[in-house]
Length: 223
Image 1 (cartoon, rainbow, N blue to C red):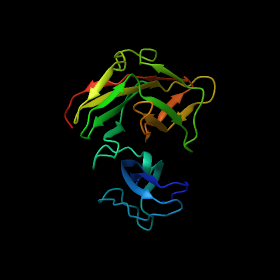
Image 2: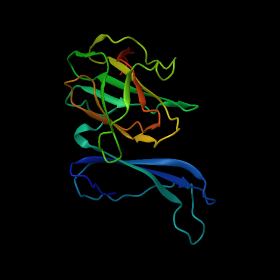
Image 3: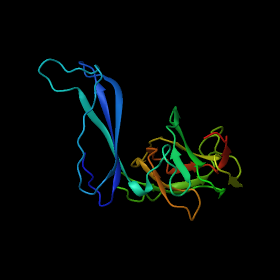
Image 4: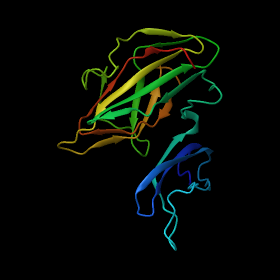
């Protein structure tokens, strides 16, 4: 993989492993962190005995997705605590009958209290990291669907070391008249003056033009 951006980036590639008949067995994700602009990283995809090719054919592997985020804004759900003293990351989300819910998680991994108040600040970005206009950001999820866990009232939270908070992104992927909007990347600021973190929730917003954003709510204090 080659970093085609002008900044040091973390590049994620998702490969599908295929059976001899061409069916998808599973996906393999590989991440190269800190790839310099223009640099190329080479590696191997281990098949682990699955997806073996037919005799005389090439390996049954295909690239299904490549995503890149600036290393300075990369989400860090694990490993050493970031310099900011907080972790911010998105989960894998839930999807049912066109309704999508992705959680944003904030964890104080530092040594001092951290205050958050209200809603995370979001900027939706397309595949080239360009801002996406024309999508309404709704306060809470009720304008999209009820029972999503995104409707707690905004409040100020003081997170002690080890404590966390959760927000939620809620949307539908309905497609009607017009061109569907896809926002693979979201730049998130936990507070207006916080350093940005870029997450990759793959927002397939269809033609709805709306995204519900939940207020920060306290999450259990286990790391």
